[in-house]
Image (cartoon, rainbow, N blue to C red; front, side):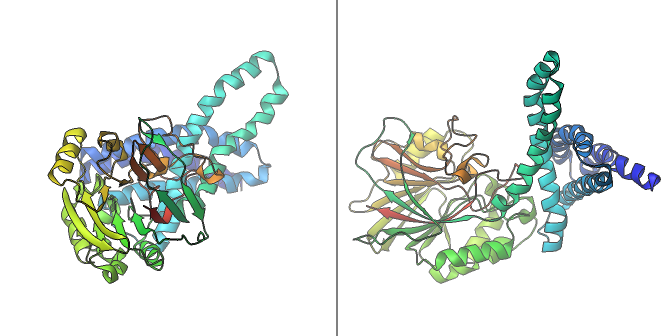
Length: 427
């Protein structure tokens, strides 16, 4: 038993070291320098915190728990390694792989990254307590090392389930002189009372990011449930792909198959990730009757009257010039409600007051880390130039930033759930 215990004790750091050395080498050989650097950076961010926390966390529990905790760390490290290896030849995987490998591995990577930041934040406090000789308080604070791992485990629910919402957006004649958050009427999990006059009902789908956290069947179910609310329009504001779905031809076509029933009322734009596989995105949307607007306009009749939809392509630079040229090329049409589909909400500040009634964006994933689950608007992007989520105003212009149907990049949503909502636009 002592031998088994020793093996388990060293299995996690041994796997971590082997992965840190071998994964970039394998990735470089099979996929090239860029992915090798990506893997090395991910591991370099996640592993230091996890390696430091591992013995500290094990020491918090009775000795009999040590083999189980060591084994859990080793399994999580192995899952993370296998997931990163899988991305060298990425494709969509069946649920056993997703739930047995990808999700545990990504949770571990996120927990390790948060642990490193958390330990650094606690270091001055612990240093002061040590200097003052307050050993009792210092010992009690050891339990705080568990917090990032506990947050990561709780965030699995936030990451897997978008919140069902009804959002009432009231258009205005005036507003702030700079881009600023303004109140919005939001009803979660329960439909609001009906309005005297029917609003324009829009289902916005943004940043679905088909991948480990967003399966083809799961997105298809989400889309079907949203269509049950009988929207006037379905507007897709980009970023459909991840590495896995880029390597799986037909994934978008399968996931959005319910939209075939609303042909002529579904419109989409490219997000930044869609430019990595534009033909796959175009074919997948076209297969379901979704019109892709690449710096184009669409005119559609709705229950509230004619609507003009201007779809902006994503551009890396020159957003101001790109938007001003696009809106000049497709000026406001008389008696039409004017909508702008703009993947990155940062460009909203370049839309001249009065140019557009409502802009719909995504891209930020709602900030992805914040306190939205607690009913607060704060996210890590709150003090940044990016409008993170919700409703914003600039003069009479309005911007709604969708929190995202899925997410990509940082491996978890922490306190910022995804969004499965119907927008009721009150003119």
